[in-house]
Image (tube, rainbow, N blue to C red; front, top):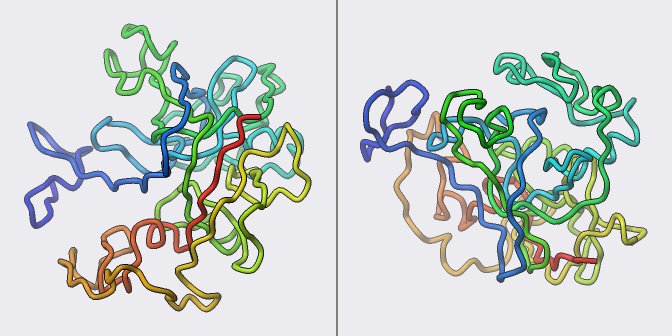
Length: 299
């Protein structure tokens, strides 16, 4: 077992007894209260993120703030899967070795293979996906098995840490914005909900939709089916070279504890301080250039 300098357990998967787990905290996307609805269950065929929730003893499948939709069975999925389903030959969302190792089954109930597109089994399973319904209120973990309710049918008997999840329908939100799709695919926090836009490619008033990876992008042809939000503010923290710009409330002068040691420390171990030039988790976890404030459009 491994502990940090505060004697907190670093990895509950190898722990025994009563220890306190440490999770990386996903940046909060809520900017002001909105209209939420709950009672949704994630689709059991969703691929896993490598982010293991130490408190819920399972892997995440979707990060908070992600645009989501419902499949034809009423199960919650990333909204971008609808675009993959329309173009299965060029599908972006695929299973990885982690999914194979963890025994994920595709929509047809068969063990997945590395590189298999998530939508490849939809036709056999009779699954379709319509337009988005909102964005995730919280991180969503893997479907617990069975009907995600009956304790006798769960993958691990009586272990169901998240029976239902909540979707935000109408609210003012904020998201990190990165320069391009490559940056969005390699954020330090895997699967983080982000917007993609060049520094000079977005401004207040622009409408947003999402791509096949369920990342926000500028909507050049707004429509009822595709438009999910409108930009209300753009806050720039870095220029196109990565240099920090503008003032950040003096956080760039804060001296913060540095752990673990500098040789092994990553962006996930940093807090807003002199070390990060005042950048908080929105920027360090995304490696982005700024933050967008957006208003969700509830049709």
